[in-house]
Image (tube, rainbow, N blue to C red; front, side):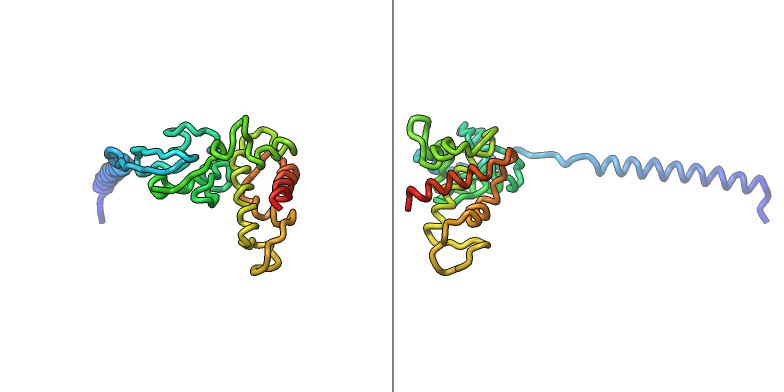
Amino acid sequence: MPTPSELEMNRRDLMVIACACAAFSTTAAGARAQPAPVGKPVLSEVSFNVNGRIHKLELDTRTTLLDALREHLHLTGTKKGCDHGQCGACTVLVDGQRINSCLTLAIMNQGSEVTTVEGLGGVDDLHPMQAAFVKHDGFQCGYCTPGQICSAVAVLDEIKAGIPSHVSADLTGPMALTETEIRERMSGNICRCGAYSNIVEAITEVAGRRG
């Protein structure tokens, strides 16, 4: 049977070993927490047509189309909202179809035709959809408006082309321009001010002119 002095020595040894293990674990964890060294960004030349003008840019391959438009071409009409593709503020038209520009890389749109709200019309020559938004007060703070307008233009093109939505009663026949259709197709564009009714009125008016 171990004597009291031997037990005391064992307890001391145990404490020393425990402290050493704790110190080693902390050091190892700290070493793992250090970020890996970041190398130079990989650059690639990107060329696309934006609002009728060819642009050639040398961009970090991680650059989104949204950042290319705002930070490199200074087309700040396209807004950065959630940056996760959930609010629609960054909506632009690429080859005639609306997309969330925050969810696509600039290099993925090589050779594409990109239209932002600036390309639809200017102060002295408003696009019919822009004019309708002004007439019906389809905005309040205006932050989401560029994306709303680009999306609204695409909605009318989709309906004209007979592309159904989740609420379309007939998937093969002509698309009916109903308030339900408009609201469903515009549901990816969030207006935190709540101007939805006015937006529907604006789209309906422009659709009537086209018809």
